[in-house]
Amino acid sequence: MFLKRVTGLLLSFLVICLFGCNNKNQEPYVLKASLLVNEDHSWHKAFIFFGERLKEKSNGRLVLETFPSEQLAKEVEAIRMIQAGVLDMTTTSSLLSNWTEIMTFCELPFLLKTPDDVEILMQGPLGKRISKEMLEKTGLKPLGYFQAGVRQLTSNKPITHPDDLQGLILRVPNVPSFVSAWDALGAKTTPMAFSEVFTSLQQGTIDAQENPLALIKVSGFYEVQKYVNLTNHVVSWSYPVIGEKSFQKLPEDLKAIFLEASEEMITYHQQLFLENEKKIREELEAKGMVFVNVDNAAFIEKCGTTIYDTLSPEMQEIYNTVKQNLP
Image 1 (cartoon, rainbow, N blue to C red):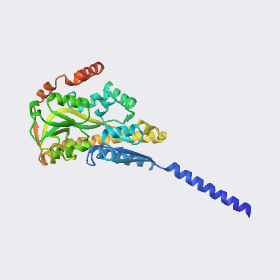
Image 2: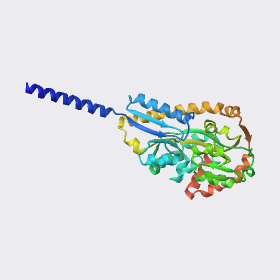
Image 3: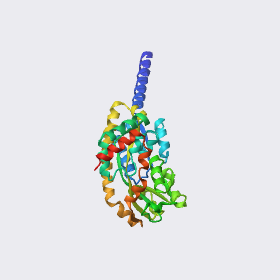
Image 4: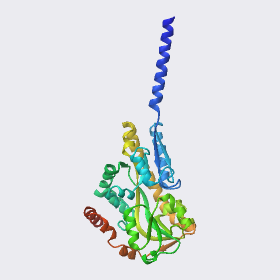
């Protein structure tokens, strides 16, 4: 009788242990992504799609929690938190030039002319070097890139020539090349986190801002800005990234699933981007914004060699090579 009781207790103990161990092994890996855009932007929609694919492909073992509108952190803070292993993912681009100079070529003013030029750059040696240095010098692993469109200047007065920028307080991202370019054009630049832009425009702390049309729309800037001045000063894109620390914590099978799903996310986003680009101008005009043609040649001439002069000799050489290889 005693032996049976002991045997029964041992069996029960083993069942409990096995059940507990299995539960522990099945606990999902939860990744947290901080985005600067809101829920309506294509980047956020792509991350939601990504999360769904991760969950499906991994049978629930990989979970992605996405927080839009800089809810968790502003872009610079998010990058530092990812480097520290506190957050896992975000989107970023030229802001990383504060870590490594090669990132200056992401969104460099007056370098690229169309979104097609981005593909040429990304498939060439420079695109590969950018991805390599991003990983090695910032600890962020790029998963491809999201097109963002061409950046335009918004304001409450029409801007057709650089002379119209005199005294204009302009918000720019905390990117040295942006500050240099707009200072050279005559504006008073104010680097500022994206989440603070709408309120600053509303309160009159700043007079203008610049961003791609899709971001202008989803951020509601049409409520506080009248004119879209077609400066076409930057062809913009962003990298969805995961911290290398976070990626290396995943088991090998989940790493493979993660990378497969990320490729699907990139393809999905490109479809969204192309669909949005066809209608975005009409939507902004319907909201009351007026599109203004500007003297683009005058902007390029006024900016002159300002950007080029801020580059190191090695980066100047790369700049010249890129210019020669573009259409």
